[in-house]
Length: 285
Ligand SMILES: [Zn+2]
Image (tube, rainbow, N blue to C red; front, side, top):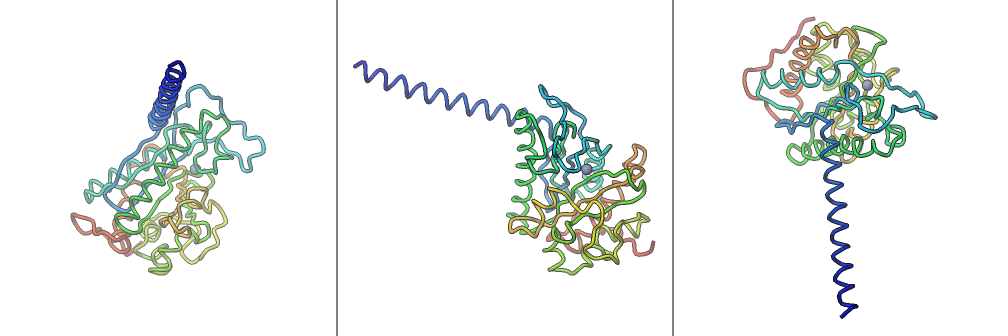
């Protein structure tokens, strides 16, 4: 009898412990997602912005970066706002909604564009980092499931050249599928996103004549992890917007131009036709 009671009690205790653990895990996921902006899209495009967040992560200090190469904690100002504005303008133009994964936590606490070993220091930051990457991973999976392939744009900011957008594709690797299907035209040609932005007056580096040699901002952990050189990836391009292009007064204009460029690209190269009016294709600078 005593033995039977003990057995029942210990299995009840075990069930309670695993329920509590599951609850705690669910709670930490909910808390971690509070510092992300997540949207499920209706077209095979995901916009990612890891460095525009302004929020502290409760209970942890800022990163010190001991031993981390090219350690940075600086915010890419207004890139969260830019990613949201691009999604908004795309919606207004065509009713299409991209997937969005935007970090609201500050880069001082987590650098989501790094492998986990370099991304954070306090253990408490782990669920936030994991939530960010599982959201990107999930968006890519859904895109592959529904459309077979798609595009990820990783939105960043750089302060080296105020009027320039740097492209980063891990020297061509992260757009391997796009280029294999359609040639380099799909990356830098007149109906590509970068080509359309160039035709709309933006300076793009490296320019279209330069093939795979990207000397600066050649793409980070996200392009490396989710790019189409990997079996489960989609095409991924890192875009580094100069300071002036994402200044508060210019975010909307930049967003309109990027959204218009995405529409032209989508019509030509994505496995979906956007609703609404035909995209306005700029053919002359
Ligand atoms: Zn960045």
